[in-house]
Length: 174
Image (tube, rainbow, N blue to C red; front, side, top):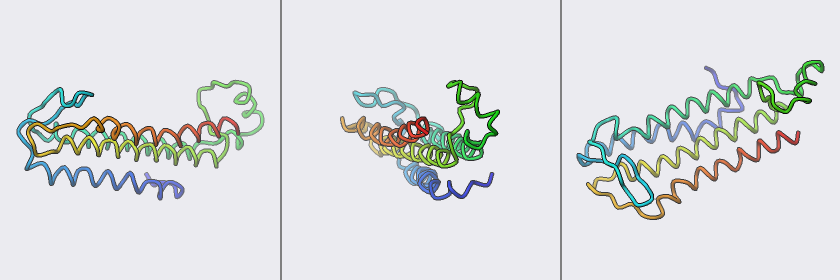
């Protein structure tokens, strides 16, 4: 798939994270203990797994899948015909019915805003996964998880949700 020009600069942070995570993991993998964290709750590590490629790189695999889905969604958003470009006889049913099978962007500009916001959200999810990998790939057999871990994990996602909500609200007003 050839990505639209408006998306290319916004893909850079996603691609950088997608490349950095596996490289960092490959460097850390030989020094990992035999048991690595499988789940980190509010009280710290509460589940363990034997070291394997799957258990060590689960966050990388999940982020790669989420990135593919997000990029495809952003690209499809740009390729969708916005409401203001529909012929008038097709546009009226969309204006009358708030809920339709396809919730089209109001305009091309709105589609670009939404696609960019979704890519920013994905990069923020990647930053959150980066924090998780920092704990997962520690060399100590029992990593101490700071209370700030939860904040450091959730804060990037919250920061990414803000432009997504702003883009959606602006689209609704258009």
